Image (cartoon, rainbow, N blue to C red):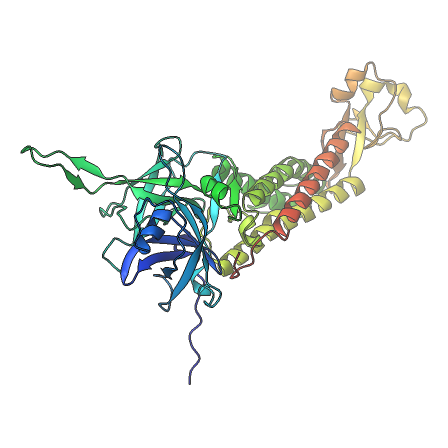
Length: 470
């Protein structure tokens, strides 16, 4: 007998989808929170048990839960754990947490777990939202595209259907999750459809029409009602998606091109560096560029990891520049490993190489006219650039010379750093002893500290491993 095919756990918009049924009749939707818990609306539970939808007492009956996207159709029975009934006036409510009975098996693992996010760093007005639901009287559901409209009162949020095929959020969608494609997480729960009414032109009774609008509770509101609900705080700003790929690619470009030249490489890669011929100066330029870009990229990584503190470690690393954010465990692990190698390990190695080259090669030369010829009395001359700059025992990477006309002269082309090339010509750059290398080292230290903080966030034990339940 051949082995049964392996069922893949669902992720993304199809993860954690459940439905509430009464006999063979669909009543509403629900979201899987863990291996034995689901979240839905109280009016859906009431209807499933034959009660009035606005009934406030906590019911004691068992609710039938089905999983429309599971590989094998199955059902479970659950009782009410948390009960926040429909509130009068403009108050949030209508939330029910259901727990499976003790004699019931766990929720099928291939159903997946719904991930929730509270987006605080930006607005979600332009985000593409999606809602999966089953219309009353039907058995097959639909994914409906939607968009955030705004607050529909002090307690409710309005979303509108935007599906080009004309699919609308209908009765039967209540309790379903609102999935944000950009965040790859649930940002709210549908509570009810905002039905529109067209008055009759003949003076007869008005007729209810299908509406594109629905009212919802946000993930933050749901977390207030269900303390154990795991909601990630997404605080990265709106400019992050454009800034991350630009900064990361610039860092990689600077790293590779300057490292290439510092090793004697030539060609089009060398032309991308700030110095394309001189080995020491390429490393000198490289350590400065990486000292500026490295901390910023590390800060972006750290900010991103904080937004996904409850996710699998690979989800805490931003996608490779110009690639999609879609969440597939195997693919994401490979992508995240590549990001670590190219934008963390390689730049750090290159910066170490540049710093060693700076300290072990090249020399500091001082301007003779700034310090006067007397300063070189008894010093063996080693001068370059038409004898305007000469080496001096006190002119070093971390040492100032004395005898300048004023302290300002130290920062007015008084020193250069460079080295002779094989053809005996000199290549040199303006240099500021003590201050310049200490700034580079300080920025490099900040870079390392930020990466340590990022690493702690990525590999902390808060995350839920792939394929397991909350």
